[in-house]
Length: 322
Image 1: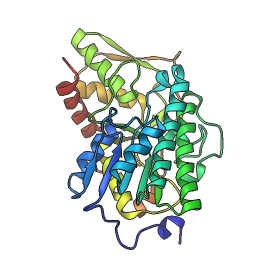
Image 2: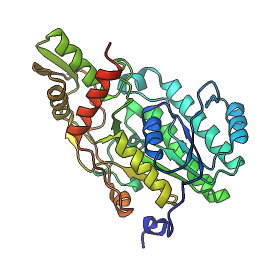
Image 3: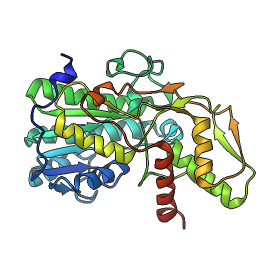
């Protein structure tokens, strides 16, 4: 049997009646996980930043000691696209390592029953074989445009492994591919590719622009996972998985950035042409995850990219546009 099969729980982990702390509950993944857990009959803890400062060790220790969660989902992180990673490397590596270190260690000290750490597909080497299996971790150099974030996420994965190995903690980790959806960051300076393109396409439509400029060649491939699918997969892993190896989460489908940009333009209603600025970086040439372990746990994504983009644009219009 494979390690994944050994790690499948004979009886599902019961969330009903448990106190579940979502660290980062106001973020895109955190809020989606809160929505998903609403049907699990558990007590969801969503403290504000004023109540617990995740980069402050004493604050985290005091809060978790006082509130005693049974389950912790570490969805809090400092995140952003290529520009943000390139211009704020110290913030990305310090904040993320501080958050995961504080939450994981405090969970151990306070006997948390189960913890799930949310990583990222950027942990894998830039030139990893495609699709990227979990075993590709630490087999080659990282993509330079996001290495600070990747190193921090790798540290979190290894912390979960270490606390499992030394203390027997039921700490697991999951690595989603590029996420998007309700609650995303649409700031033009710090957002990821989908919200950035969507916002810019919307502005171009309103302004009546004839062209929309896209960073890079448009030829690199990416896989995108809707945040509601991600939240569903996280709950599935909490209930059914207990293993040392991190689990990939994706759709198994990929598109070029050019195809993505055209689909976003269609969804938004921008009728101009796309222009690709090849002087700007592309990032990794391809990032497709091997989802076979997650599929062996009987989970697959259900939201198509076009449907997910349409619902995301609806949310953008309702919540971001003045």
